[in-house]
Length: 483
Ligand code: NAD
Image 1 (cartoon, rainbow, N blue to C red):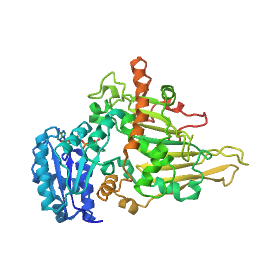
Image 2 (tube, protein in one colour):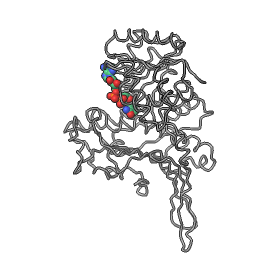
Image 3 (cartoon, helix red, strand yellow):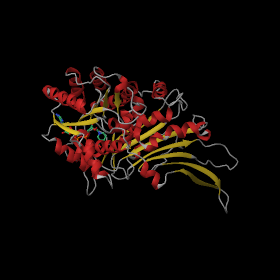
Image 4 (cartoon, helix red, strand yellow):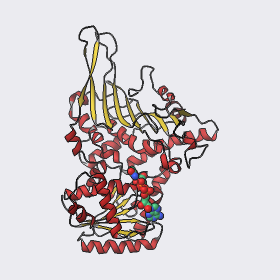
């Protein structure tokens, strides 16, 4: 499908996400002809910018992300952008916005199609959704809305936000975005699992000992201390990215690749997600905060962070399902700030098998998601000139030329929104289940805080997080594969 007619309204048009991701990715989709003659973008924010100034910003954003561009193309693309100064809390501003959207719909023959993108502080999402509804901003064609993360702060606030959004949009038209689902290696999980008998047939508790997921960040909270202190690693990373990865790893095979079938498989799995009790949280979860170094602040000394904060900058935990191909297999995860390096990786740890060579020899399947993109499987052979087992990796990787072709996750997902494919977005029933899990952990921690005995491990910056996380394994033979 090419040249999709649409008026796109970006709430937060002067923000970081719009500048670094949305404008460059929209340009790439324009170059591919997906949006071309019949589209216009209205960028909104509070600042008093002009259309011309927004177009300069769009052009700068493209130059910052592309080595070579055709200046005429950039100019032609930027000419589709319009700026509307808009305070999302002011009802009257929606009337002006609606008028501009209608004018542009006529000028660009956009057939009444509207795409709303919430690219601003999440506390405004509900207000925007409410005013889209009460000021009747939706058009006569398709109406879709993209909602950034986080979708709520807990189950109750997520339910409230969902109610506000569903007042104007059907579930099928709500695109809850998680850019991890646009990443190349995350999109490789399904084909890897389902198309190779070697892998498909061992995907069970009979052969898989445990699964480990690490989302390590090198940076601290930087300027986001104020926001981060109200969120923490569990809400910021586990509720969305880590749970999406877990779901792809544990779900049953969908009957086909349609969005409905994929979501059906995910939902079937999530019904059997085990929600931890407070005792299980105590046993299976570790929360931590980074300490300072010669050149960096400890978390509690970061600007805008409460000096008595109990917010975790690190979490490790365990989860399991009672159904699906890997029912009963422990899935360990950890994420945090100020790790030794930035890394997203998944280790599937296979069981040891009895063998005539005597010793136990581990075999793993590893998926590196960031910064490298590859999958490798350990193969055991014999050592050349002495008795014993030699371990080598068999690697699925990309050439430099192939890597250059991999689109940014945002480009893929924006493409999917335009062509109305929700496969790689979060359905409400999935999100709800993720929040039920997160709330159970948060509630248990809150009770510990209130009792005055929170166990918050302090960890040295730029290493692998707190050593307490080595104790969440079910068996003493298990350990973190990535160290
Ligand atoms: P930002 O603070 O850079 O931008 C926020 C935008 O909202 C700005 O344009 C600002 O002017 C506008 N704004 C603030 N108050 C307003 C008001 N009352 N009325 C109208 N406009 C107002 O934020 P960001 O980093 O672009 O993040 C936006 C969203 O995207 C957040 O939900 C965030 O979680 C998500 N996100 C961002 C990134 C990223 O790389 N920046 C990545 C993933 C997700």
